[in-house]
Image (cartoon, rainbow, N blue to C red; front, side, top):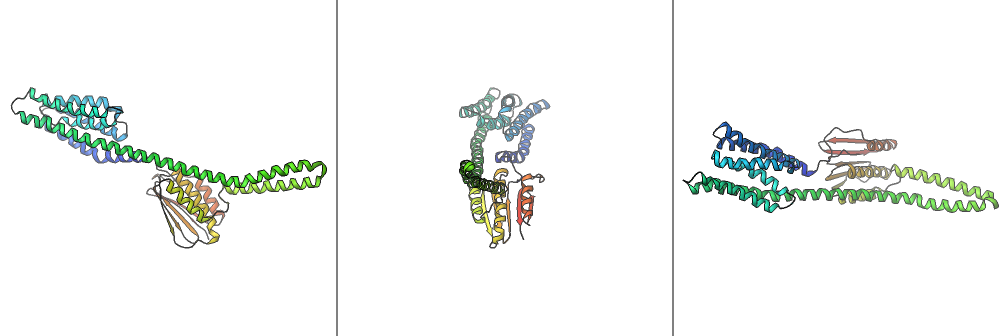
Length: 365
């Protein structure tokens, strides 16, 4: 079985945002404190707002921002009027604007009303500066109202589409999972069909022959014994065929397996490339088909693949898929069973994992 990479794409995107933007936001917060703080006490208060905003960003990156939303919003909401009325700086809106912009689009309801309330709060607190400074009204309005309110509105406007983007990513992941499950179900249905082909007819014939033997046991004992011998042989043959089916040793058609693999992968949203470098030797076609069927099932069930490349030569096959874990290759029972079957037919199975890619290759003499 192929190793998997089970981390959702949404989680990987959030981690990327955390890695890229957290240092920038921390640096911006330091500038805010350095610009407006005139004492260590003011630096402490303004720094609390910056820290609260960074906590919101970290939890947003983890996907559970609402868990810390209320306390962090209260802290940043308190820092902004302190900055306006006490510290006399216009940069203290950083915390409430940024934290609010991350929280509001994630609210379960009333998001638009919350966005309006946040913008109005930033503007109203900024305008309260006029209560303590009466000289330059236009300058106060620009520094404490226009700039903070405008930046808050812009950040909010950007975060709403961002939330929609993550929703689309989630929907695509769920659709992919459903397609993969459907592909596996189709494979199981095909297996059930093969099993029915083997056992359905046999069981019906056994039933008829058993009924016939019961009728003949008194009138024609020799004929009844013959029927029982035929039943025994038929059951033995069915057991052999069932075992062969269970271990993928039933006669397979490589072309049919290639087409089936292509259909299954495409149904699961996986890009497939088939490279035929030579005509496959008829003696090796069935063996290569066994490897392809087993590997196809493994990829669908156990990998988060987006691309699969199948390469065929005269007596070998190589299947490469992405979406594999970067952890060391574990001992996997499915691959061990496949290796035993390949080795029993005189072939060699190669399994490699490198930088998120997984290779399954088989070569036969």
